[in-house]
Length: 439
Image (cartoon, rainbow, N blue to C red):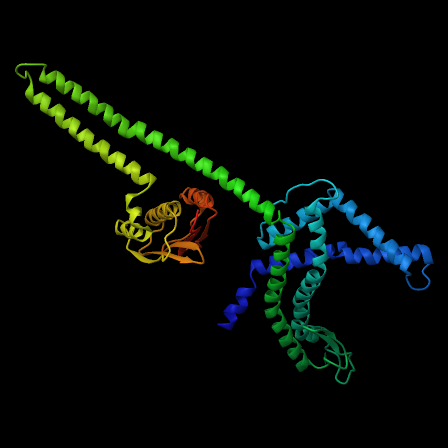
């Protein structure tokens, strides 16, 4: 079990996180504190000839130079390009996707100043990333000591050899504290190196998670700007969804109910001609057949109209989402385990979206998953309705694969909802829809 956990840590993701730590080290130099020290030292060298300590005048000159440098970085595309490079590294190596902030040219560019704030926070974060990277290096060096001893320390007996320094998580301790002077001691160093290598991936993941949090908070578009962007996107999705719904209704009416009603009118007109205007009916049998055909057409048209109504707002939702999901589960081709806990009823719009999401997800599971059982759970937690559909099928659900998941994502986003998919190859699959109780 312990070996499984240890090997699980040495994955491609751990390597990418280590590369992110190493790639971010040069950015420490662009830290405002480092730049301030350099500016003060440069002023001291120029004004004092490198004699004595920096004076208050040197400090003031350094602060002014730093301020001018920061304004220059923010006023030009330099700060934005620096932030863009950091976001690309986070996306490529950490899988953290951060949107582009809004552009506000000039020295008042908030995004540029946030880049400088991130660079200031990068100093302690970068030092922690350097420490995490050192665990990998120190661990590999310690682990190699038994091999190095056998390859390069095969001197004659009695020869005095300098002890090998041993690296620890607290740094490098030389002779007199912790060192290796014998072959058995190298195995102790190797054990310490193995322990450091086992801890290195978790330390790397911890510090890169902190850095990713800083990138999301400081290099992104900002809460207000992101909220405005999300609202604009939701409005656009709502307009597109309404337009698509109207087009679908128009197409269904034109291709279905309208044709059936036209056929109904034609059959009734022909039946009236067969019945005649007065006197005996010349062809009663043909008139009956036309009336029967018109009756069947009327029933079919009513059925299609009822289907259209259910597509807009299922009547079963009038009794609540719990009853609607129960009815939906009863019609499933695969056995479904249902668990519903909705003490507070959502608004009609939310109930409708949740119902259609459940219907689409159940249909997807029946068509594509090859599952034997499906679970459908709906619960309310902190004013959020969570609807999850899971199956024990083959997995590999992809929104880009045309399974309807992309359409559900757009429909959920209209009301500031969220759809998440967990579907590794081989299964199982769990799709969770989070919706606010009030649209």
